[in-house]
Length: 578
Image 1 (cartoon, rainbow, N blue to C red):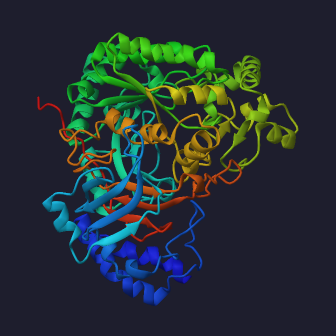
Image 2 (cartoon, rainbow, N blue to C red):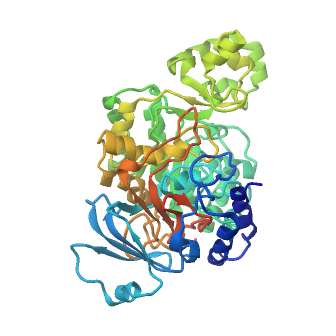
């Protein structure tokens, strides 16, 4: 085994059911031994299926090798920083002091002298000082909509290298727990993760849990069972409910069901996040209105996941769709949205098939008895979505090939390929069906924040590049957003939408650089931030983050990933106790 490849194995062995603080201390105490045994130069990185870039074989030297900093137990002073605090306010020069996983003090150059408590911390002999050299210091980025399994890929390096320190899982109507939410949360905590995890319970998962039939118009007792499962999840610390009404079984839900499942979310002060029923140009406004009506009837706050207009073009079209959100707000519905900055989506191939060819209908029967109708539908649908050249498969055996290339290799029309060789459920693909002008206009709207909709394993660059791409393209190159606006859309706005900045809703607020907030922070030079992932090589890590702190622990130090996963699940405190 390669020396560097052994490092994650060693650290995995000390993950036990004890507290995360204890685990971090053990890691810190073992770090000097590891550096002696295995070296700490620029040798081979660990063998990993999810990325390239600096790995555990690239440890920085100097004071960090002593391990004290990785324990999170020593105060850290970041000096000479350009502080972008996440609120949208103009950047200011200053220093930030971290202690006990929190921001202990924020000291701007134009402010007065620090108080006595801060002076005492600054006088400690074990103070670790980092000169930011004029780089930006911002809150750790918060991903409003992400995917991944923290029990199989706990490191989440793809997010950390973009500066993301918190991700929201359980999206599009599917959540990972497979049973009681509290037990799943405890299991994740015992494992430890590189980023903080927020849980949303999935509507489709709840339907499965109660044995709901795949039909529209569920019986009242089934709805009551679903409400109970959702209420239990909220009491356990879930941040809300996710729906995927474009997917099975979500598309069976009618207005009564949608209102019913949102009521316990409203009761406990959570959020309904929705992959809406359609993102197509001719249906997207009606789909957003359906979500707004769910919020109106239930009283829940609602949120449009990865807002987009499939084959819609231009700023004016974007404004028409945004107007639906703003009208709902004027009507009293608290509605927001997120987006990822790519003109291609990524999902299962079933997205191009008609409802009458999808479950609970029998596809084999449709293929046999309605083949001509299906061929015509698929031909028209794919051509409307920019043709077979605009569908790029991300799963084997067709990964890296377009639908046009697969059809050419098999010597038959693409619609027959879909019917015979790549039916629903057999593949996922990127679909180049969006418009850059629409993305730019969406980004400017005050209700829209940033997400990735990505994961460590997904074959779409958004999981490795979204947040870095916002800075590189839309801030530095095009000037669509100021840096302060972009950081707000990646931190403070998302934290406010989720309730992460509210000390009555979470044990430790985050999302802003404020005294008493969690020490989730990033240090970077905006001119050096790069998204390196492409559709051909989607698992290339972003670059440019000099330091990334999670609860005061540097998971990235001097640009290199450290062998520590200090995070776990953030539990939301319930608003009421029925």
